[in-house]
Amino acid sequence: MEPNQHERRQEEVITCPTKKVVNVRTRELVRTFIHPTEIINVNRTIIRNKHKYSVHEREVHEKVEEGTPGCDVKRERRPRPFWF
Image (cartoon, rainbow, N blue to C red; front, side):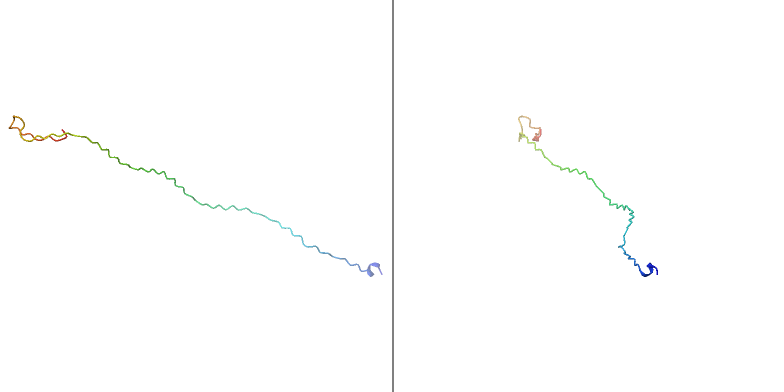
């Protein structure tokens, strides 16, 4: 007999945990969002009208003659208006 036949050699098999290899392939995608904005610039002018009424005061002397003046009887005399 051969020595190997009588002696049964047993091999021990040890299984290690599985090694994980992760290959990541990243693809970048740009998404454009448009948010429109409208800006209105208002240039406002406010005009406030202020009315002033100036008052001018003056004094006028009025003379009224009644009846016939002096010697001239035929000519009528009317009172003169105050603004003359």
